[in-house]
Image (cartoon, rainbow, N blue to C red; front, side, top):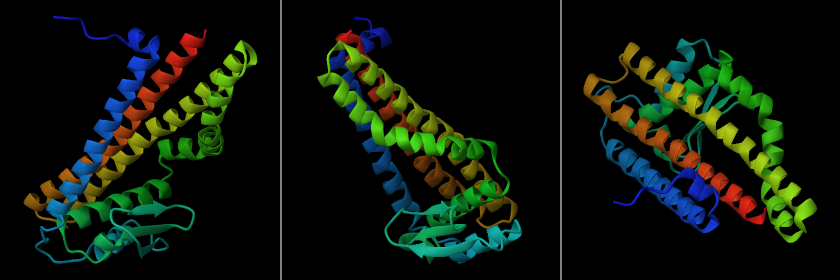
Length: 239
């Protein structure tokens, strides 16, 4: 039986690293498909109390004293999010008026983000602090890498170095996103159980939807890590 390729192998072989990126993208596509299928399944399961997701969101926010947080609808499907800039929980058209277990789980999750902001949850504070730098890095890393490949050894190599460091900053932001998302789901399920919003069997469905959504963030991180390996491999070959 042949040994599996090591990290060193990928770091020194751009072509192999390219296939690693493709494999990671495949995982991300599967994760995206899984969350859509899981939500579709539990969006058909109507909660016993027949209270809409938007009403549940309002109840959760009010129970935490967040009366100033607005709950409104937004276009699209699974486009639910919390916007801290205008203190608004936006629920997609497939969620807002739905009585389903899946929709209620997603609404509670977004309320979890609102609660995090109100309590100044540490990972969110760190994300906010580094966001201006990460935003610039995310816009410029690819141009630095491409430009560096067309310049001579110096300054081309230096430009690729800076591009890779910039890209690594975006990965750091993704890493900080994971605890934020997991904590929002934990808060959501705690509120759902504590206030008896869903019955025990219904809670399992909501939890599956949130776990499927969390996997998309993990998959996106895997894609970025694979891309980072490929960038380093390109740099190593150039050197």
